[in-house]
Image: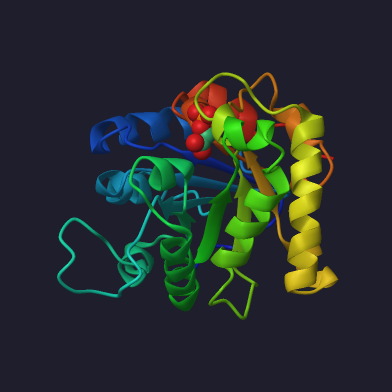
Length: 256
Ligand code: PGA
């Protein structure tokens, strides 16, 4: 079953290492009763892989809500204990894969080269690659913002020819899980820079069609103003996606 075509804005919940199958079922019972389908957006959840089947079952009657996995290995199969592959994620019903989240990069040592291989594997499996980029506070303060974003974006696209299923999430590391979100102006500046780099790497038309998600301390209270910022085409929500009522407010945010 392939997911419906992506329609921006894309509002995604990254559960990280939270909610086993039982809690996932409880969450979706509450979420689906408070969030009604909206045709003008795409909603996606990234549950832990062990909760994926429970989530897919709970959402069987809600084809408007997509599912993804938080990480994959770049190989299709083999002796890689503890890993999972993009074709396996596709077989399980995933439509999306998060790649290069800052926790993968900074806690698990994932490199730009790993991100490039994973991106290619995900696109080859026919899934949407949501590649996370973003600077640390130190990099921002020393004026390296654009250099870091440029390097992460260029390397993610290293093995990519067709960018139809490619998406970027701008997640400043200093804003993740800290309660300090980027201002809409900060987000607009970074997203506009990324859009420009995407246009020169692909084409103006392809770049314009790519949603660029903002992530980092998104809450029901700031979702609308962040989404309204220039070149922000979606939200990637961590902590606030764990609460069904709060995330239903974010998912149902007024658009346009
Ligand atoms: P946060 O996380 O919303 O809890 O800041 C965002 C993310 O890591 O994707």
